[in-house]
Length: 224
Image (cartoon, rainbow, N blue to C red; front, side):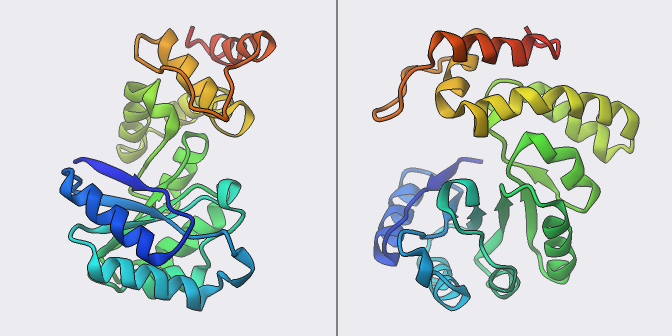
């Protein structure tokens, strides 16, 4: 499946246009983040209206994306429960890391054909424990096979092995997300034989101290 990200912070119209472009480019589904620029007015009513219009018009299914660390706004529970009933909304990627929230969303949407996905490798095992069906994780760009192994262990009930693997993934995941961000993810990809490339401005390359920290976070957990 080709899953494209429509990371649009502005008007519904702009989101619709980008969704159509991604579908035309071959996407099987689109991952759509909530608008947040005027976040004081982005209440449940506004967000339900926005995502309903997008889902009504999108030629491919929509996956909701809640990433409060970047948007400053968590997609409200009542909005998710309402939107999960839309026939063209498949699920939710939740990157907030609140496992009680993820578990409650699974519980409140279980009557629908709605998939809840962890948005980070740092809490992937915990998300499986409360009913998530998978994850969309930045760390998978570097340790993809290891995250697939974690999924296998969780789904087969090998919880002790899963716990050990999950613990080894927490620090590398933090480094390439909230701690050092995209520049660290790109650097780690280069170390593991992939093409990370340069960051686009205004993001800057890692400093020497940051690069050393990134290497420690991977090497002390046995990945380098």
